[in-house]
Amino acid sequence: MDIKKLNKLSPKIKRKAIEEELEHIPASFFEFTNNEISNYSLNETKTGINTNVSARVITNWLQKDVIKIDDSDIGKVKRFNRLENIWLNVVIDLRKFGIPLNSLKYIRTQLFDYLVNDYCLFKLKILQSIIDSPEYLVINDNNEVGFYPYQSYADKVAKGRLYSHINLRFINYIQLEYPNNKFNIDFGIKNIDEDVEKVTLLFYLKTNDFKEIRIVLSDGDTRLITDSSDLKVNKKLLKIVQDWRFKSITVQINDEVKFIIEN
Image (cartoon, rainbow, N blue to C red):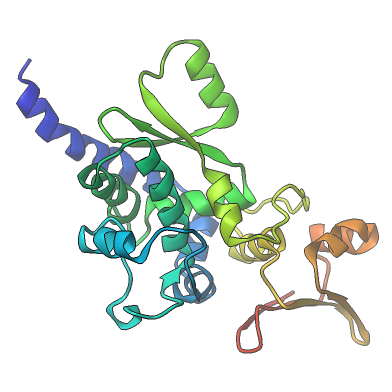
């Protein structure tokens, strides 16, 4: 076996595997991660760095393309979008394991740059972890990435099917960006695979990343939610939302941005 040829071929095989995975995602997930609301919340919302990494280290990582920001945000306090901040905290932990910068760049390439219709694995796994089921991010000794549901991971480990690797609980890094999250609450909204509006609503209920939600049941009957846990304790209202029997729902993300679901 020619090890050099195999090493050159491995990234191509991994890219193909990731692209095939992206081609089989639910239609609603694809629509959400490519719409304006998703882009605003994950790509355009800029925050400061929520870690103690020095400016010198950040600058070095930017120069090595381990992390990236828009040119227009260079020098700003709030310059990292949510996707980049989540990745930044992953990088910090991987550096603790001694992963070199060139390997981190390759890991990033797999997560961000292998695209199907502008859809990347990193964004997909954030969405799946929030609204569907959290997974482990696993990096093997060739710096190739994989995501495993908790039970699947446990089964593979028990059967000896995973060799030397680093295992990160991916949801932990997402939680840092959404400190008021309700990830542990099951809102019981069903049949989300083909309905982007259900995915969108569930995303904001889970992240609790909104100013208010107005649920119009009928003319003259509007319910106000300022924290998504309020919906969980209001069983009658929750049932109406689960059954999709409202007249409209307006999610006011902030003073400038909102989206409306109408029945």
